[in-house]
Each structure stands twice: as structure tokens, then as C-alpha cells.
Length: 124
Image (cartoon, rainbow, N blue to C red; front, top):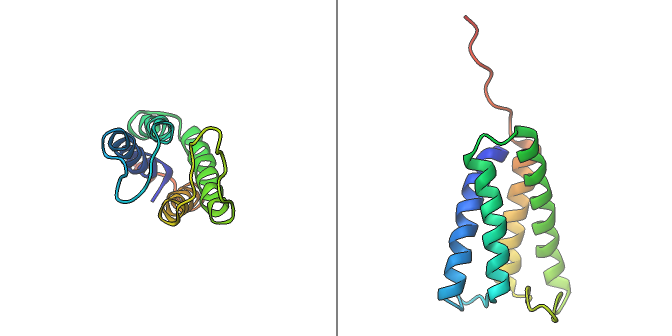
């Protein structure tokens, strides 16, 4: 998976989760606050924009790498911290949410660091 494909998939998924968080809370047992859903909408919109437009490949790769780092840190930190932002109520620790953040973050890191470059055009 490369950064462009990751941006498309993760962007659409985060947009859907963000929208569903407003109407279906708790979502599959996860307590998603309105602010948490807004974060999903914003990050999903950014990723979808990078994935579905002709955004610069290096910009896409760098932002996917940053996204992967942030979500991986959130996932790891969530296992060790009772509440990270109690005054904002953005992020409550929940094992399922931490695991999902880890998967999304590690997939972003892999897509940015291991994803191959686009195939070179065929020479005539």
C-alpha cells in the first residue's frame, strides 16, 4: 500500500466514522464525543483530499507519515494514560479505540515508509 491509496481508504473510513459518531453514539461500544467525531471528520477530509486529488506525492507521503506517527502515539499513550484530555473530552481511553488508533497509525507509517513509488512510464 502506498501513501496515496492509504489516504483514500483511511480518509473515507474516517469521514464515515466521523459522521456516524454524531448519530450513532456509542458506536460499536466506543464512546465518541462530538469533538472526537469532528477530529475524525477533519483528518478524514484532509486524507481524502490528498488521496483523491493530484496533490504532490511528497506532500501526501509526508502528511501520511505525520498522521501515522500521531495516531500511533495516541494508540500507545492511550494504554498507559487514564485520560489524556479530560478538559476537552476528546479522547477517552478505551482498549478498542487504542487498538484502532494503533492499526491506523501503523498502517500510515508503513504506507509512507514502505510504499513503493508509482510505476515508471513505459519507454517507447
